[in-house]
Length: 172
Image (cartoon, rainbow, N blue to C red):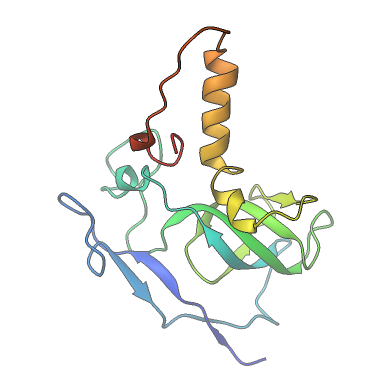
């Protein structure tokens, strides 16, 4: 098969204040990938379907020398976040072609080779829900809200809970 365009969103420049599209991040289309022959080295080849764009990204848009709870986005590389992808090829025994997978640290590009050591969750979706829900209420934001409220907060009958949608996707 001929090489296929592999468009991606590149972290281009550390912002001084707010990120500026086209400056902080750049949509880039020059990379290509041969979907039939790209080496998988025991991993999987995926087509990105949905990506979660989250408030914590701003904190990752910094110099790599500045330490924080989450690593900085590397300059000149695709933005990384949670994503749902379709498996096109697999060299892993636990993942097959056609599976939908939830991948933390998904590079923001159309196609990705995910290493055999990278954590990947195969999504069963027995309820036939929209796949996009897995980067929202059924993904990291929803799990954060659930564990924060139910497991850590342990609400009791008669208590009042205030949830702010201003807190981002977790509060929404």
